[in-house]
Image (cartoon, rainbow, N blue to C red; front, side, top):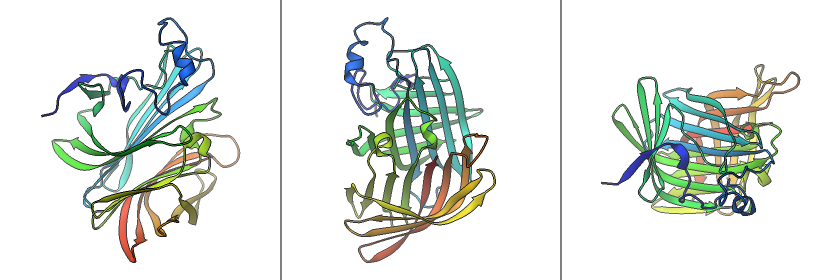
Length: 320
């Protein structure tokens, strides 16, 4: 039986104990000036620290995927927080957590903090173990398990792929959790509405595919593709993508993709995905197209090793 301690979300998704340096943290020079002085103020430069987490069950019959978006925006005067969690429940997306708060400035603004409806258990070593949400009369526990892969890329962005289990109403669903953590200095708008695509897919025969692409690598990190198939894992650092089909959205005053295409050049793996369900979260602007964050449930195919396999999963997309 694993040992864990129940605490607030101060250590949520930090992969080492306090004081560790990972993507999304302040530069070492800034932390050296504050960690030894409890009264020291955080850096004056406004910075948004974003932690995103996606969960997809392994079993094709399970549809309860999760997308978690945790943003801390630090300035010299305060710390703004916006924490959101979306669940894909059967055939639609629904928001199960939406918390906004303003706090006093702190010395470690990259860390996540407790809310009335969110907590975490950690191991005896201080590593995250269970993410717990309390939404009305319902509880959700996302048990973060072993790392399948984890790395910091050239942009300083932290990526991780972990085994995970979602517990809801006493039912346990095994799956994979993909984490993405980075910092955006002096943001003109929330990074949620930036240019990126995050994808998790599962095939009918048990393969797991993770894709990440962005045109703004300095902020969001380097694109990559990752696959587990036939007992082996592989990671590639080149990924091509293009939009195949769009529809006009009067809500967003712009065209939005409903079919997209990906290619991993080195082994020539191709993938095409079509939106089955979609949810758009917009950034209000008076004129012109609205920046948005989109959540899709997708179906399609992936072709590699001379075979085409059916896939399904989730896709998160931002566009300015």
